[in-house]
Length: 622
Image 1: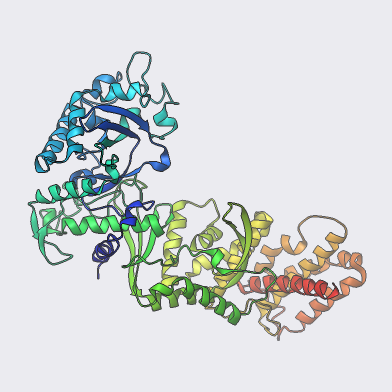
Image 2: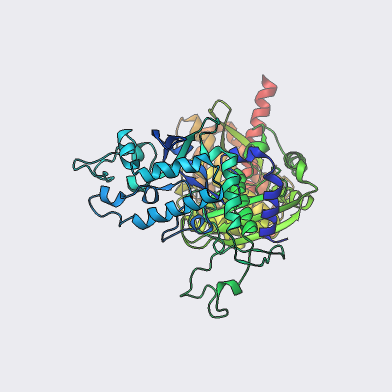
């Protein structure tokens, strides 16, 4: 099944539930689109003005009827049939602006009126569109908007620019990005049916849909369904959000090489039914708004045909994997926890087919939207992949804060894999370019859903940054360290435990333990003296990772005065150091080659083991 047929089938399945029309991003009926509206104009059934209101930003997304060309318009004149910009609705708008911000809008107004009249001719009993036409032809729209304060004039009596009046309601309340005349208007028509809001009236949806489909005479073979149906000439934009101008399907470049070079006309390149295109794009827009994940221009969405909740591999819920901070987790205990919670959340889709889709564009709001990943698999397999990823990368993290129901933040400790975005930011820094972060997330997706190994360059970057604690604040480095442990463990396909492996005798692991003990020993001495600064082990960590044997000598010498300061307590740490050094085999200790990321796992585990034992000892004393 192609991505388009899957989305069209999703639309057919989910549009039966009328509640989807009232979602934050609604499942828009075919022949309609979602657009941000800035002004509501209220009239009665005879076309007499009642009032107007500037719409707050969070209430602006509105379902409006559209033509095939207006739904995908990027330039040129192509009016929507009912709700649109002032350039289409206000006769003589250009005469109300004194600095030639717009050209003569007579043609735009004429096109709008003609389209509205054609709709009325097809549905002569529709009182609401008759009322809108009557009001528009009266030519009082701008004066009425000024009288009710929705539009502000300058001292010369012209529509004020943003520079002249930055505090105008359309800028202050509606956040219109350019000028006042760029505002979109929607209609509320009171005819006594209790449904004055045309954008929430199902009879208006069906009236326009019925008329517009009757005008479609360009027919051909639909490559998606195999049927002879009206074909789409233009395909919708506004896929990722209401301001998105990027398109998934477009062949309007008749001077470049979108299709030229192999074919003479775009119709020879593909044929997609108008209904299928409308359904697929509407379903995709709804799914993205409901359960999509964004990173820069990258958008990732997972879904099932029936619309059930599905985990997004790029955006798992950290709170779902939260644990008590003082719990010790073996790999087996962690796997049981992760599997239970992942399967619990995805219980409804185990026997369904799951679709995963990633889209990206080189620009944020125009151009082409490319599909960089599309995959389908059975729910059982999909859930199994999520479980496997969480298991092999499972580590203990404490850098996340979540909001409670009352809006207050609380810090949690969780077991599992970090999000791809956190891995990308750990590898390249929180200030890395958005395109680099998005590219890294895209490269990590196959690791999650296909089980391939994490790319070596990403692993090396994460480990390299974790070895340099002096370059970041303590909280950031601790986050970096736990993520590095997750990534390296995942790269090695989960071959390490989350608790200290006291019997592991590999060189890199033992060196990591030594560095941790040196850090703990100096930290203890500094704490007793009420000093707050980085330890020698922390300052030398990067060099230690490159040359462990030679650097250890310097760290060990630096511990001498701290041992004297600690007195008998120093014996505990010195015993630990001797115990670990005795575990080196052959000439491993004198091997001065660079350490792998394994030493970070040992370092982290040794630190965790130390503090866990201290907590247990305090509990026994109490």
